[in-house]
Length: 377
Ligand SMILES: Nc1ncnc2c1ncn2[C@@H]1O[C@H](COP(=O)(O)OP(=O)(O)O)[C@@H](O)[C@H]1O
Ligand SMILES: [Mg+2]
Image 1 (cartoon, helix red, strand yellow):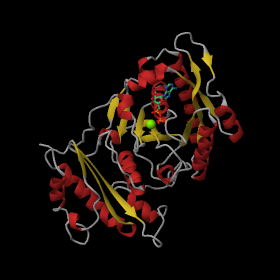
Image 2: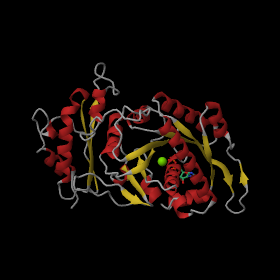
Image 3: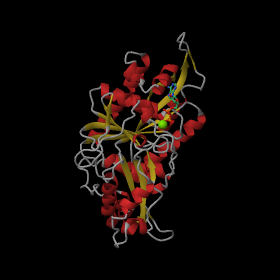
């Protein structure tokens, strides 16, 4: 028997809100989504009261997980700012509201990275974002293959799929299982290809359209970042949601990023979006480690001849103009697509191919930049 939203509601009735009312009667619950044992909902409170609610969120989470038939849960505490008055999201007060109970404020980061304001993630060395101005440019494919390229450099690598609007990692990695919980009820990322991988797609059905409101996005991502037992990682690759809107900006602001990589196709439109991406990261003081041109040129799978159907080289020129490093060109090739579709990314399944070499050389360039960024800071 699968668990129902009503059963969840009944369990939540035993959780008291800060003023004493049972949680379902406090007027703060979003719709409860239950999908094949996976439970998702948010608790929406005023940012001024967020701190008092953190404990309620944790207790609600425990109550839900204790129900037979519940395999995982993601309960987001979202702190809304009151229209016209209260603090903007960027104030420490509001930030505490979206942060999970366990994400205590850490002391200022010692190495004074540009993101020194954000608490580092324990055990995780560098966090880098892979971003794009728009969807469909191959951001996720690039992120995963670069993560594998970093792995091949001997680094311990994690992948956080923060593209909660369209999580790609279940498909690209072929991961179908759900994350297990450890003794302290923290989710353990799935290990695949020697990478630690976490995606909201492991918890909610890929086909289920999720309606995310601004603060919920950050809360879900913060939980995947900070309430997951990542272990010790040299580098975490974050597959960002596409675009440069508020959600992306908040994410870039609140995740302690060491740098960002922008993926673009060579076309003008994509480049304009890439420029916006650069502006966004610059605004929040995250160094852009470089631009990758994806689907840069077409390589015939039969004869190997290449043709520049998309106007190859646009991203390199753009990078030059913008004064950011150009990291490399990945061709449009059927093998890249086919291996992605099959859940066996190219760097893993065809490690000796020319394409794998391209990804590895970009990964090496990123690693060089990261060293520069962290030692210079
Ligand atoms: N270099 C490439 N050559 C061929 N197909 C690619 C390449 N990069 C990405 N793709 C394909 O393009 C589609 C979109 O890629 P994806 O990584 O999901 O993009 P995004 O994350 O930006 O939305 C997928 O079908 C993927 O397999
Ligand atoms: Mg994607």
